[in-house]
Image: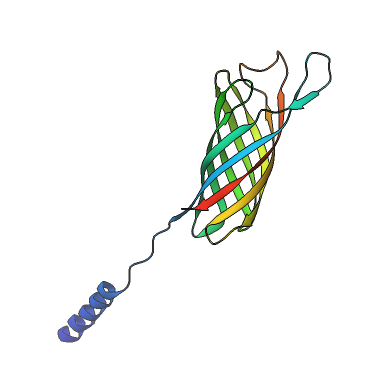
Length: 170
């Protein structure tokens, strides 16, 4: 009886030791570079919203998706507005991908210098693959800035932005 028990134990131990290790979760990383412009609106004090062309902006960042849940992702971007006066800011996104090339996001956007503005944003990305690792994309978005030192007194700033750029699988 003891011999059988030891044999069973040895067999079980060798089976466990010889089994293949599980693959750990990993991140799919996409580097992004884009240029954008659009419309910027706000109340100039007349009680109506006046629109003007938004400053051109350069954006770079990274999209991260878990290799086991490809529909959900995170995006982290830095941007600089390069017209009239330079401003610098960032954006953090939750991304939901319907297909590998069509996604939607909600975000928190902030301009941090020389003045501040912070607010939520929404948008979509429509990708056009140029190969296995490179995708050209168009990305319309909308943001509202209710907080910050660069706001007209008692008003919010509205952004309607269209970015165009390239994503590269890293």
